[in-house]
Image (tube, rainbow, N blue to C red; front, side, top):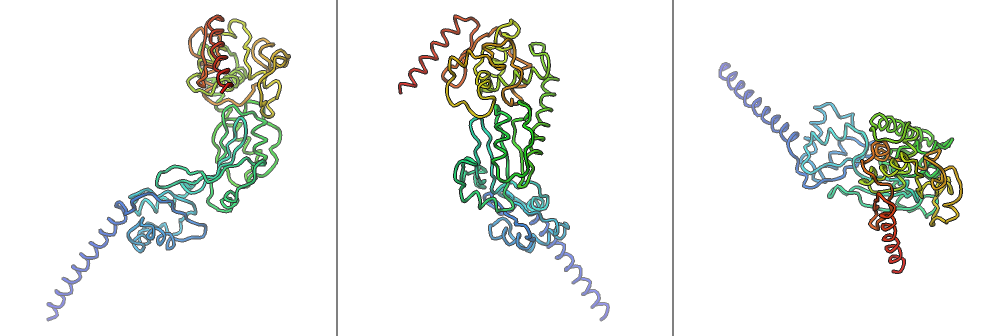
Length: 384
């Protein structure tokens, strides 16, 4: 009898263990396999949340099939206490394991709200935008000019959210005065910016910032990036370069930056200035005249006068020989590279062609024809 009972108990134990093993294997499969989410969602994890709340949220949004199984997997992987606050873009079909990895790894939020301060050559613009998980594209909620326009309510609302991200986007060709003045207008930043950085020494780029960041430290980071770019461009200079030092490269790059916004033209424009420098010809470029008038402090906002083209300033390349004494803006990497690696060719002139680009010429006669065409385009536009 006892032998029979023991045999039955052993059989039951084997069956239980077999079933338990099957359940574990099924659970592991469910935890690691593709999830039920049909389209991406933005999962917000507030500060102070926990895995129970997160799992309920995920199940309600159809991202996971089982909240309890999700929590068991979290405990099994020993990540219960590693939850990080933030907003996370959960892609369609994401497994429970992948979601847990996302929300415990932390780092910058991958969706939700972003406030971008765009420092451009004519103005600074603050944008409030949110990522649409369905399209993975940002949707603009509001925009305004800090210090000028009325502040939208949604801006103040999103500033109060702990997971809102902030970014400064510095355009190529802005002046150091414009950058410092823009930072002063950004109400999320603290501290005095200090001495204005030298012209040309701030790297146009995108900078992640946080409320309370120090203005002077942000400027220092911009300068550090620009030094790295200057060194890299100079290290890779070609034999065709007319400039003889990194300082001259920076000056020429700033002129190239202000002359063209067309990426494909930068090395062509560089070749014109290189050829003129090599021949001892004056550069005769309008942006240097404008800088002599404004000193980089704001936008001229009108056309140049003949008197300004003739006026002697240290930057007026219609009057001075060679390069001006300082850069006239903060150039990007592409303009730095173009300054020391210009196109091969004999171009000495260029003028706007009406399409946003320029018409290049080798001879003055050809250039005059291009100028005449441009005048016709200008006249036609002004008459409409």
